[in-house]
Image (cartoon, rainbow over all chains, first blue to last red):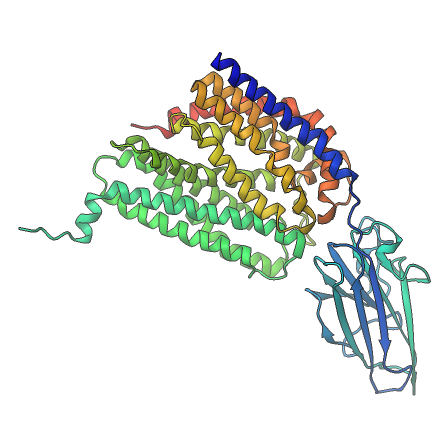
Length: 193
Length: 359
């Protein structure tokens, strides 16, 4: 009798365990929507005209206006340069991870694929990362830029949140594409000789 | 006339007990290393730390220091042992080799980080660390269990030391299986990720076997004392939950799911403590093995994802992918997992009869 009760308790408990863990709870969790972080980005440029030898400031203010996310990225590309050294300087930075300096020719992720598709960088780029990212968190990255040649000086700026689940996971969502096949905001400063 | 006791005479008189203290320190040290290691995996996944000096590394190397003290105490006590030298020789040797590897892994890891940046889960310094953890925890386990088996007076509390003896072995063994199956080892310099089919087999065979082996060994060594498997399993789930689930904001609500894993553990405990036979232990082993995919939530998903889905999974998407994979994984692994649990239980009997219990 005692043995039968024990077998019954064990049988029922295991049935509950497997039905809960294999059928009931997975269905409950899969019915929930995945977290969708949404980046928002504002950029301020101190001046649109400078003389050669002078500097200008480019300030990025970004925010996760969506759900909790794994990574918040802000990146600035410099299509008129081959090297950022002694030209681009970060003067303010509050992301959790150190900035990544991408050199032309480096293999980098493309088309918001998280590295599944790659391209080779055509120009230098600086990437800031914060991991993880709570909703409503704001970030600042501020550059001091001293162009070394006259003419138009262009900067491409964009923000991406991971997981990248839809077009709302990147900012901007339309416009010009950069070397990674991703949308960018374009800022140009004329450098007078 | 009062005879004054010198440290040497104290050591001589209490050498067995001091050897036990050394074994407890070794096991506790490795427990800290394994907890730090599990936390470190989560830290790498969520925060991508950029330096060697991180809180999980601090916990791990504090554990190494305690393990080192444990090995030194064991050595001092062993030298003064009179009757039980042969019994405690193997635990001492295991602790020595283990601690040598552990201590060596620290500078090796630092040099590796300095030269190659962020390393993956499976790398030469990490495997050195894991091997050291395994050997040192086995040394602690043999030391504690042999002391308990050979001491004359037994009390109820002493059996609980077996949980401290076997839990680090379970965690260290899990660490080795994880490093050989999780795809967390490719870096800019080295591609150490295990081949997906090998990883699939390794996880399916290794985890259920290990779970069953450790739980049944603990039950057998305690004389099938009720509650031993539940306490051991509860601590394992608590450590895994606190280091792999709770730090990830996106997984916190799945704690409800994870806590269900106490059910097969308590049932296995009930079976072995009720029947106290090899047959009952084999049934319990099969039950324990069958739940391995749930017990090793969440990171085990990455192993099966490599073979079955091949999706890019960022940390906040873990449970979606985990549950998406569940029907397929259960279908492919449930029978092998039960078989490996049964084999683990059979092996546990041989292991505890021949190696651990030595009179």
